[in-house]
Image (cartoon, rainbow, N blue to C red):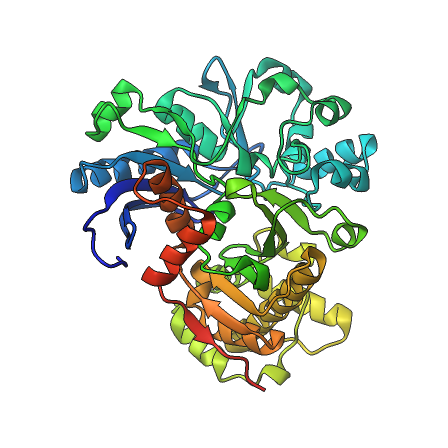
Length: 479
């Protein structure tokens, strides 16, 4: 818990679904208060079936309900609930019934969707319309990979947080920041691009009405409210339901002079701008323009993030080694940085689950450099490679977006990785401010609190509250 006490504050609850786990957080928010307490945590374990890799979304929903029951037990005065998650993945429904478990974005079916879409419209043409970087799992590619008869049978497609919101309230809407990751919105997020959808042969009728962060989705269904012990007046408020959109709300930055890195499974590296940047340089650098809260634009690039390290650790553990991550990072800090390779973390070979050390070895062999030899060396190599990618991408984001980057903010789980933060500062030659680690949850809570009248003002006012209640850790670049 962080903050300055709950005097003059009110309570809201956040459901935050991440790629490896989900949480329910109770927030107390007021003009001088920003507290967040996790009251429920549950795993997010994807499931492999005969047709591919899926999310166990019903399990996640059950975990969210269990957490929300505890939230209302601890804070009966909760005014609203907000839901955020990762982007791009969706469930198809007909007459309110889910038509199978949603696919995981790392499932290989997206390859045929890419081919189908680019046959109709190459990426450069898409970029002029939607401003999105090429990622093979963007929603439009996933939809193109679906059997045509399934799309014809479905009457609604809901991204993951919208689907959770539908189950809670019975209202099907598409929150705009997450919808901006589908590739099917007009540049700037001003609405569904009907011409593009028709050109790609996708059914327009399955896409619901848009809703903006801060708008009320609806009251809890009576049976849901009763099961949670919540008052009948409690509802769901749309937040920046794409977790990065919520995280950027809580970056305590001056947007005109800072880059941000929302670092977890992915490292989302970018700057905040007022309107989409659709230049040739942005296209060539594979930068994306995604919707933010209050109409801001998140100009950013996806870097592979801590996925590479976490997957390497999982592999070592499967081999029978007991890995304590802080101890491993301490050992890595003792390794001479000049003795390990800096590899391209964005190489597509690092995307799927699997043996990361073997893939690093293969990359090194192809590039004529010596591979790491120990777990500490592999870890140092991963950290150095991430830090270089973060530094390069932050500088490039500033140049493309016209932002004079003087500071880099790292939020999310990566802000706890002291070695990564310091090496990013060193390689960028810029000060790094790390924290808050709970930026996504805090951004979710803040948008709800503002909608409920617990706080007021612009994004800058919300970020000032974060800065006053959650002091960042400062990393100064070393020679």
